[in-house]
Amino acid sequence: MLIKEEKMLLKKTNIQERLARAKINNPVPSSLMAEVQKILDADTHARSKIEGNIVKSQNGDVNFFNIDLLETENIYHIGQIKEICITYRLRFLDTKYFKGPIPQEAISKIKALEKAHNTEIKGFKIIAPSKLFKLEDKDDPLLFAPIGNGYFYLVHKWGKDLHPLRKFLVWPFKNIVNLTAITLLISYLVTLVVPDGLFSKQSSNAEFWIIFFFMFKCIASVVIFYGFALGKNFNHAIWNSKYFNA
Image (cartoon, rainbow, N blue to C red; front, side):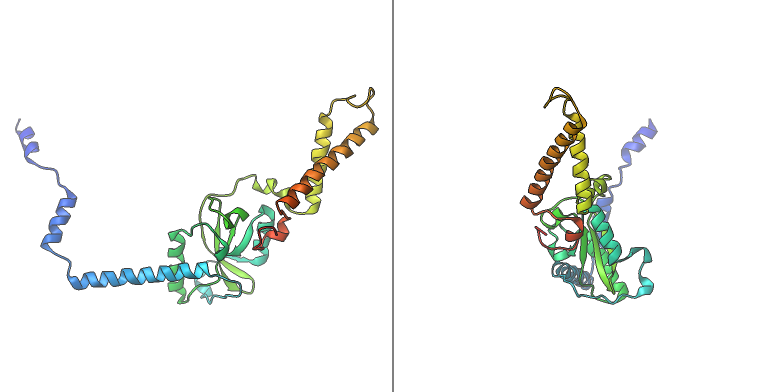
């Protein structure tokens, strides 16, 4: 009975109330508040400057990094970037063409890099699917800063990873040989589906190849029309193109 009464007498501690009391008993000096405000203003100015550099990025900008402070696994040559962009049908463009939001985590990383290397970073570029340079999405953008001599430093990656089958889905658009091969394959498979004797009483090899040639012309016509109508092009032609119908 006594234990229950003691529990009732002992009130739980509210940390927020304790903090409020501590604040009243030990108020923050106005000079310290002014210092905090100064720090916040400086941080806001630095972030605004970084965002401005991202928006107006352009070719030709070179950053002077301290090579000893860079992580070698984040350094990529333009040839490696081009290969990945062509394989997965991605674009590598200045960030001024990017229509999605740049996360604050990326801004923080840029700010830390600028402080560590005592430099102002410019000329940002992004690897992303073509549609991300026109509207927002959640696919896998990668933010780069140029180092010079065709090398780029990976600053930040965000969003979700690309679909595991993307490499195979965009394979036909890699070059004209791949597109022709997939068109021939589809035409052959469609020809196999055509019932025997549909056009004549007796099936023959000649009839099969005539139907195959007819199917190939139909499917190739659709592919060509789709390509011209939507302004599509092969991966090697668009990976670093800023034009919609490149």
